[in-house]
Length: 238
Image (cartoon, rainbow, N blue to C red):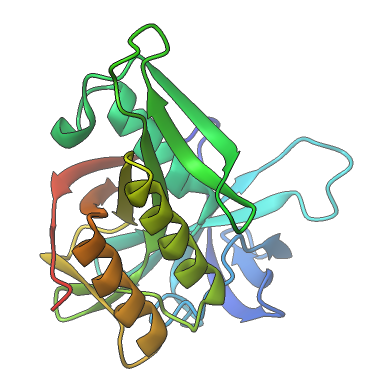
């Protein structure tokens, strides 16, 4: 996914109130940017780091800038905008870059489903093939990395555990369910649940896998010009 128009570079001054960040642009101007990430952003919100922002021309927006990337260490850029993850996974599926998810004729987003009144991030199906089994995909954006291991979640997430319960119900109904970890950085080799942060999520993930929910993960090549999911990652839940 290419950033068009190009991103604007700056230096992070602080992140606060979860959804706001103050950034000093390269010309010296200090602006407030929207932060589309409800997590703790551990390791991804250090003041003084280089960041990149997109800018909207929508006159109704209070904050025209959106924080997209941060350089977590020299040469390692990380995408922190959780709203990008669904788009990246969908793009990878539609371009045939996820071998496990090929063969479907249609991809739909934000479809209502489940006993707990959820919306599935992506639903794959083949409406003209009655024998095709629909595939329900829940996408999770991952930014927390510790010595090459990406971990999710980075904060307690009741909602994330709810989504796993919904996926288990999908499997029990005879359909296919996938939890897809979208890692918007490249310095990783595998994904694990962050049991020390949210033990309930880790426990629920293991139950989901035992039930038949599939786990997929991809690491992204990230630059100030584009983000693209490329490299498959193993997911260890034990």
